[in-house]
Image (cartoon, rainbow, N blue to C red; front, top):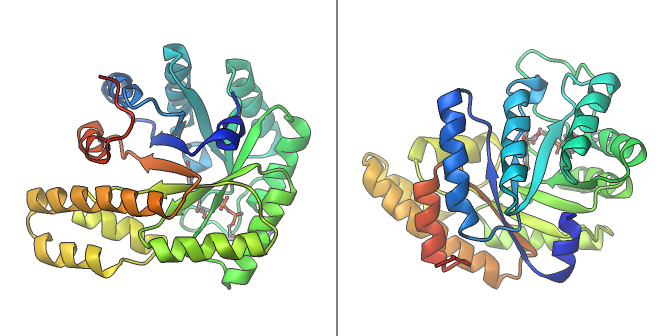
Length: 288
Ligand code: FAD
């Protein structure tokens, strides 16, 4: 099923996982998926290593979700280091597996790279190509509620986002965002710019002080005072930090849902026990 069919009818709810590096990690992920299915996600997305790293495991993870037959899968895909021949072969393979949904991105340039070293410099070109060569895919694009870190201005970033929609992106998956007001303002601005595609909000659970600071700061996102206070107060105590961070994340989910989001996507960080605590705290769709 195409994810847009779900978004047309209700707020979506979904998880993101990443491909493990080892066989043991893969086995663990397979069992972890069973826990995620209990929450009846509309789909599970699997990240794609830019430059092709771990791409094989991405296919394995997608196949495992397909084999389980419980929910839809969306693969991430980037054009870093990918010329048309490789794109054709990988996307052809995804289609032959029955994958209908793809999050098409440029990817982060690895250190020292000048450009993508592929046939597309930006996501809009990749999206246009997928729309033409693989018209059966339902295409999502990445969006940045607090601006992409490298964009020269918010207006330029929104113009590029509009180009992704104009070239075939049917819905948008957001970067992590802790600031509800910033997210609301972003949605207002993109609607004003003629972007009508539904926006699925990405939530990064606050489980580990260093990780949450690193991921937030490296993406140029803001840390609200409430989260900063948790970092300041519990930063030296990992267990207490996680406890406070989980409570914060649950409250954030409530606040975003009150703000009227069109979809909620949890970056699971492959930590199912913590995700389970958060989901249970939010009272989300658990099978009993
Ligand atoms: P683009 O849309 O190409 O934008 C990149 C930059 O260029 C922006 O500053 C934009 O304003 C600018 N720009 C865009 N189009 C043009 C244009 N035509 N001309 C000039 N400038 C332009 N990375 C991975 O490697 N693997 C993943 O699985 C992955 N999953 C992600 C999931 C989500 C939900 C998000 C939000 C990001 C994910 N990323 C992933 C990271 C993503 O690849 C990076 O954020 C990357 O830097 C930008 O990708 P993009 O598709 O948004 O790029």
